[in-house]
Image (cartoon, rainbow, N blue to C red; front, side, top):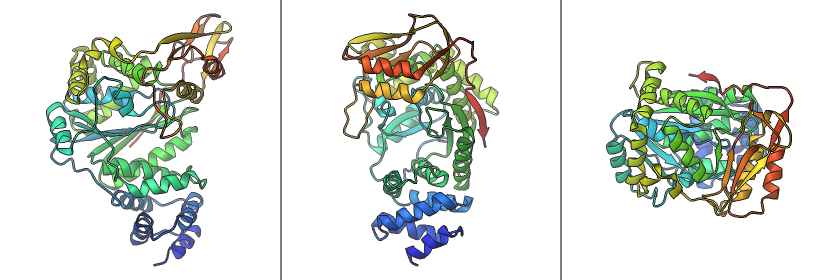
Length: 433
């Protein structure tokens, strides 16, 4: 078998078989296939797409290129959730304890984020003492005891994906549905969950700006998940404006606490209940979505969701008293309001620009070496559809410097205020099974 023949075969739109795809991925992982040939192959896939079987085989080959997490010792159906990202996406912080509080095991492997704000681990590390450096044995023990734990990503999880992802970034092949879908799903499958709920974002703050593209990606990922025997569902949700109000690590932890009390922003609350109810159903704890949702709403009402969050934090070294006293979380030195320039209605909030403004404050990483300031970020005071008067705050900046003119300008650029009343955007577009 020669790599050049396989590149030509895919370039000509033919279907590759299982052994051919395995040859490509194994060869690239161990260095036998050079970057220039893999680049040509990625470009061929970009233009010719892949069949369902090719996508499944590619994903399985990437899973087999490195470590796979064995969660067999955890009792019950393990359900994982993945979001394709966005601005102010606090769902994991809410969902992990919420779903665990009704008896569904959540064994979460998370990473640190590049971009607007930190990843789930960075956010959780806003809680003094919290850490994810635990052994696999302790991880499994914690999930069996508390139904929830979070561990850092294994360095050798899907090495083929890491190499291919870096290559796609510099060869113009990022926007390829089969390559995106296999990249995401290989990590989820290697992480060992029995079932997966996907939150695929669409809108100006999402990777997939267009609804049809988001649907295509969701269908590809659901097809791969089900194709390898993992029960997989997807929700397509809005990211045309930031989710919730908070954008920033400690600020998002505080918002997650409010949401677990049933007092969070309406959109974040609704999305968490929708995703959570699917997780509960896939775990076999409820017959239908209505029953699952009722279970989750009850656990918010009776305080069990919040107690589960406290237990989870304390079990991984965190100071659980922050749940009752959020002032113990890292707090910025300055809070500065960005005021509306005229009366009207908020018609648009460009999520990407809000995200970049938060990153410029220090809430996220521009490069892997960047240091995150856990205290800083933005809190939105107005969302799309809200009425606003001149001088009213649109956003409150939480900063450790009072020199925030650039950030204020970015916020003003992100907000569009018009004379005519507009409605709030659709939050959840559709479900893919």
